[in-house]
Amino acid sequence: MRVLLMAGVAALVGVAQAADVYKYRDASGRIIYSDSPPPKVRGAEKLPAVPTPPPTVRPTDGGAADRATAQDSAKSTAPKTLAERELESRQRREAEQEKARKAEQEAQQAAMRKQNCDAAQRQIAAIESGQRLARFNEKGEREFLDDAARARELDAARKAAADWCK
Image (cartoon, rainbow, N blue to C red; front, side):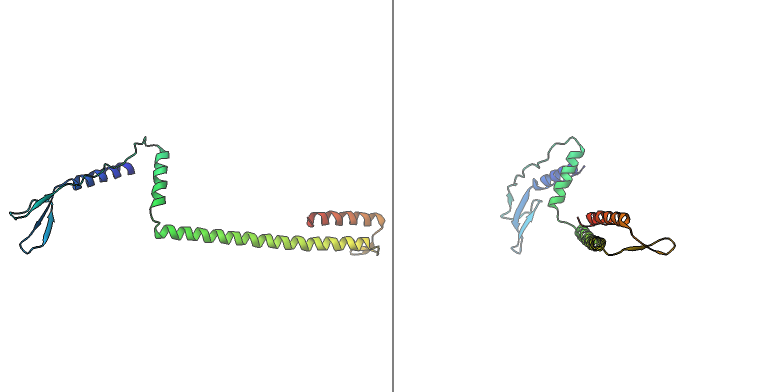
């Protein structure tokens, strides 16, 4: 559709340029250019018509690829409207905000991993220190850990440290 419209406009421009042009001076001495022959004036001359090259229109089969190519070339050469520039600016701003939000989340996760890693390492150090360890049972009573419970706690603390301290 766009190609046909451009071809029609080019044909009309070609017809308009092919019209005769006359140059003459009026009674007050001004130079007049006109497409109609002058009234009986001395020194009137008909200017030669300047040939216009035919428009270069590429034949198309009306396929979507041709329309997409024509639209892409038109978009790349046409100046952007205010709305398009505003949209691009808004999209860039949103992308920057999203990038900053992701960086902040990653920093929070890294801080949490470090905190959990430090806690797991302190737990390992406490278990390996040899001092008596106690836990509270479901009744709220304090129970001291025997060697088997201490070994289970140490394994659990080492697994936690391996997970958090990567």
